[in-house]
Image 1 (cartoon, one colour):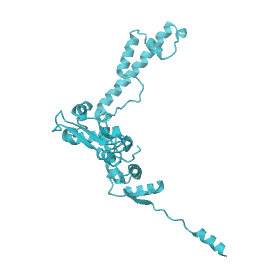
Image 2 (tube, rainbow, N blue to C red):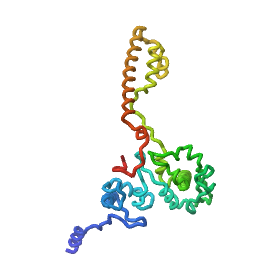
Image 3 (cartoon, one colour):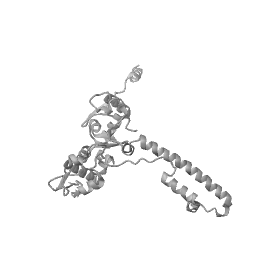
Image 4 (tube, rainbow, N blue to C red):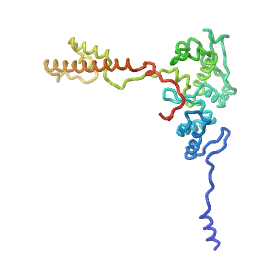
Length: 299
């Protein structure tokens, strides 16, 4: 009887219930993926999180994942990670904070400044810190106005003045620290770029159409109509077919067919260019503005 009672009791015993989240130094954190998504759904219902995370549990889950990797609060990640050109980017202040708390360096990042006025051409800044493992002082690259103007960082973006014009001193220190981190501790941000870097990188929009451009078509048509042997320039791309060339009359017909085909393509290309010029804002087509994380961080 005693043995049966023990077996019966074991059968009805319930396993211990694991908590959905754990209290850590960086706040509440889920303990597994299932609990993580339930927690993300809870966070998405909160009005405390930034607007673009509200009702977006997928984005909240990504922010929670980044917070676990960086060892910071998920709310901090939500406040400092944005989408720029369809890529997540962190702001400079978070990049510096992650570097300072990484433990790689003895003390937080320091700055060496040359010049008294950040608006003058002789002003420049570089960041430095002492690596804990070696005791060596490491210096980042100088950030000066020659670099700023050469890279076009001081140009206005989408009609708004560049922060290099309105708050140059702060921008010099931000960029110096970020470049220092890129050079000596890239693992801190796991390769993610900053918002400023993403905004300063133009996005080229390439057409998927493999048809040659208008200028190229005009040149080739002129060559063919003028009797130029365009095939001579093309045969480098493949094996020679000199033993199987068509007769002269067949070559003439073939050339005329290609001319007619390229003229039709030229007319279509010119019509497309005219429509694009009438209906599309060139600046909007080339560069997208930086926005907070949208409906889905994965695209």
